[in-house]
Image (cartoon, rainbow over all chains, first blue to last red):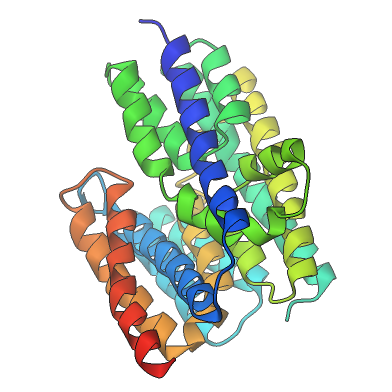
Length: 103
Length: 222
């Protein structure tokens, strides 16, 4: 099977996606309200990515180890822990649970 | 407000984790029997981790390369709104620079930029994170592709929890705003429900429907 064409298509399509946003933005002046909605939309994308990557793998529940680590991160972030603490604690929680055999 | 030194250290940590995941990507891709150039070219030209893993997953399972491309493009569609949000950091520069900068739009580079209120700082943070991740990711993939299966099991290191944690740490300050928080929680419920039945990429796009109530709410207060 030839990989060249799909790879070129994927690279070109991805770059097009990445250029559309900055292009549209440079062509429009946006109101404070739209500015606020864009910030909210970005938060929605990130929280949706967090939730789906923590909970779902292959259309089913991901197991307890990963959500537990992400939950630890959420609690620490809410208590305004440092970035490094949040990230390392999440990875350490998940890694420790897996070490003890929790999926 | 984040100090510059702290931001640099935090970006460094994410680059390190990204490099490790890149190494596992390279090793998995070569282990799946793909020609060496496929993971290397993809990492330079596509530079989007989730999409790259989907391509390798589909191809390793004997799937059609065009189906792999379509699945990966679906996952990358979120880069349109993310690119829009950092568009101000790419304004007023020449087109070659704009294209280069757009290529550096990733979840992490946008999240780091979004956490900076000052436009000047937002711009420098976006570029620093974008370039750092690009270098770390490609070195990782190169190392993994050549050294093979020594770092394939990033799950044992808990790195699958580290990436959501990075986003949590960066998005948390924005979630102190009640409207943002409620909208994001609604979006997360939509995304998780959708992820049980729809292919990756679509759930996150559907989550954006949660912005509609916020749209109405801001109209009422404006």
